Image 1 (cartoon, rainbow, N blue to C red):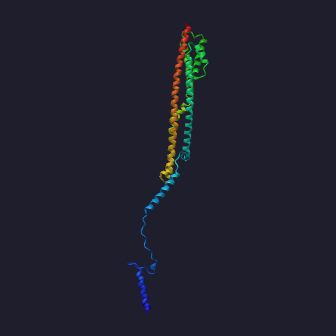
Image 2 (tube, rainbow, N blue to C red; image 1 turned 30 degrees about the vertical axis):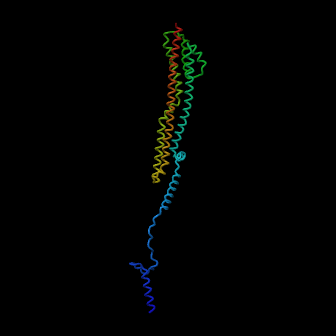
Length: 292
């Protein structure tokens, strides 16, 4: 009797531990049933702030890995861009060197021409002009005088200097001899002008070629990495644009130097033409005086 009562009490206790509406599987221990899933936990404000701070730190670290300083951009250029940059850099250096050379030569020539004309205009005859010019240093305008004077001496040696019928021919020969020396002198002053003009016209296009090539390489890199992140693309594009900046840096001084030199050469040419006219007039008066 006691054993029967004990069995009934045990079965009742086990039935009371099972949740309502749920029958434990046969042969399964009710104590081993899985517990219910815990409710979702909402992060607090302090946890959100901490996550934002960590994200900002990671962004700062990524930005630090992409240094966009000038030297870094130059080091990351490819072979074509580096070649373009070297060519344009050499052109810029040479153009600036030509600037100092042209300034020195033009100032020296202008001073020599001024001193020569001041001395020459004191002469009243061909012989006086020759004696005065002999004391002056060699210059482009003096080479014109020497050529014209040599032609006058040849005419005198032929006995045609005092003949009115030979005057026109004499003036033509003197003018031609002086024009030849004038052209030679102006050609010397205009040396490297073609180079300056070429750099001023073509340097921007050379830089543009480097830029196009660099952007093409950057797009190929985007396709390979399959990312459009600005942090990844920016260094390549910035390096490509550096070639355009170098092209402008070479073209601008070249154009300025060319304009400066062309203006100074034009002034010198005008002064030499005026001198040629004065010398021919001096010879003409001297011929008239001797023919009288």
